[in-house]
Length: 452
Image (tube, rainbow, N blue to C red; front, top):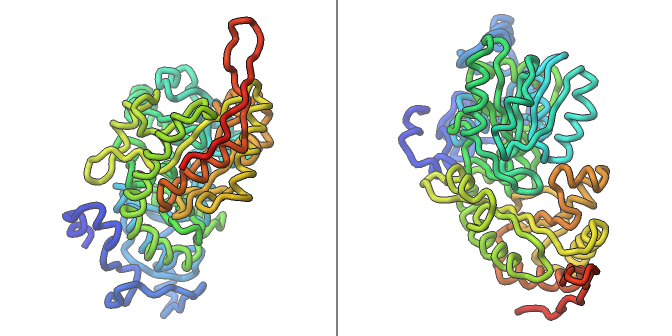
């Protein structure tokens, strides 16, 4: 069935997956039942021994033997088979959250005394993990601007083992050329012993496998927050690491011992609703995202819009090359980042806070909330929310604008989204630089008319 599934279109495989799986004994239900047992009956000590031996070897499993949910369980295994299939990987191991998957990637690929190189802009919790927790394990990190892959060799040390980045990045939507980074890493690995090799790990949460498949560009491991686009409905939390079969068992072992296990109910929901609807959801939301991005780019209260689909964007050429759907069409995704005008960083941050507060109180189609990839449009202000513990000057070093807003486009009508955005932009009334010819700030009032 694995080989047969490969004959069909990837968007079709999102719906049917493997179609049948040895992970479930009952092949006839159209929708697999939800596994609700934490513990599984063993017919003999021999069966128990075979089940535990799965953690002491590498390769395709010979036995689907279930002992305890934290080890393995049918719904998770069926979802993992489908995730590996749609991402182009040999194996997938799920976790309780996206951060659980990222922690596992670092935990498996790094040990005490080693080092990782990361792109300077990243999800706030990943930043915290790298700076607050990995140092306790004597694992250090260097952050650089990987939008210029030529900066990588100088940052790599003899003890470096992982190059990590998101693309598009959270929240600023920078695009990193995966093939160029892989090329740099391959040149470095050519001079290293196999046990000292560098691994490239990419967080593909923003794009999802529908818009981008990093493994096809030579990346070693890809991580996703299943909570976001792959789930799509804001009902279930999860994460996944996808990569080569050689590392399947060690990731299972890590999950067994650290305990970050995806629940069967969440695995079933993502497999039954999230994956089958992914292509349809993203096709619809991408159309609205481009429309909204163009609207924001023309608004006088907006200083800058970053959306991979805008031709004037700095990273448009790279995005166009590597962000492609299963039919080869440009797939710039559903995420928009835009920055409000303001004379000072403090004024920009205040404008951003006013903007989201107005949306929270008055908007019908846009919800102030963290997360992304939902059927509902969500907005957040990173500077005063997810990255609030980081000082403004440090935020600037990460490329985060004080007036920057992250918008995740859902399935609402684009005209309705623009109506709510117009009202919030008028309410924010950001001050902006009109002229500096005479050496002083000119701060005209914004037009507060709401466009139809």
